[in-house]
Image (tube, rainbow, N blue to C red; front, side, top):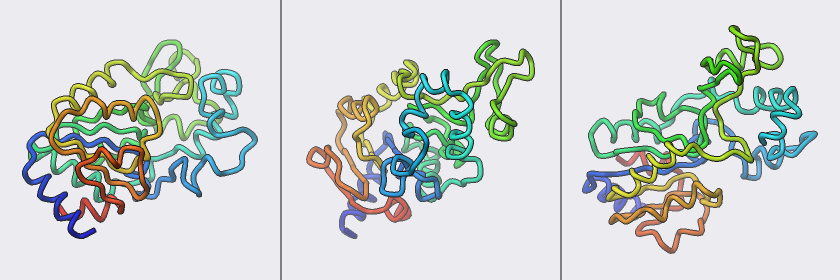
Length: 239
C-alpha cells in the first residue's frame, strides 16, 4: 500500500492538468453520513424509503415530510472540510488541479477554497423560490419553521439539489465533461461508481493516468492505472 501511495504522489507531481471526481467518501471523513454504507441513510428506518423521500414527486406531494427529512438528514452546515478537500484546493492554487467534479451537495470543496467545482447533484447552499426565483442561503432554509417560504412572495422555496426523477443540469455536465476530456490525470475518489449518469462521465477521460481511490472495489478497478483501497485522507495527506 505504501508503494501505491508513493506512486500516487509521483503521478501528482508530474501532472499539470488534474481533475478530481469525488463521491460521498470524500465527505464522510468530515463526519457527514453517506447513503449506501451499512450505517448510511438507505439502511435506516423511516416511514418512507429515503429514495422516495428524496424524489421530485415526494417533494410535491408530501412537502411537509420532505422538509422534515431534508432538515434532519441533509444539513451540512456544521461540518468542516477535511484533508482531502484542503489538499485539492491547494493543488488548484498551484495550478495543477483544473477542476473538481463532485456528487456531493455539501459545499465543502468551496469552503476549503476550491474555485472550479462542478456539482453534479446541486448544493444545499443554494435555494430558490419556486415562483419568483429569489435566492436564499442554507441558513434561511434550515432555520425556517416548517416549510421554507419566500419572504417576498410567500411561495415555497426549493433546495437546488437534484432529486430523484430530476435531470442533471446541462451546463454543469458539459463543464465536467470538458474538464475530464482535457485532463492528463483523473483521480476518482470516495465513490463506488454505481450511480448513473455521474459514473458515465469517466468514459470521456482520454488522458494518461486514471487513479481510483476507494475503500471498496469498484466496477472500474480493472481499467485504472493505479488503484488504492484506503482512506482518502491517508492518501492525500501524502502530498
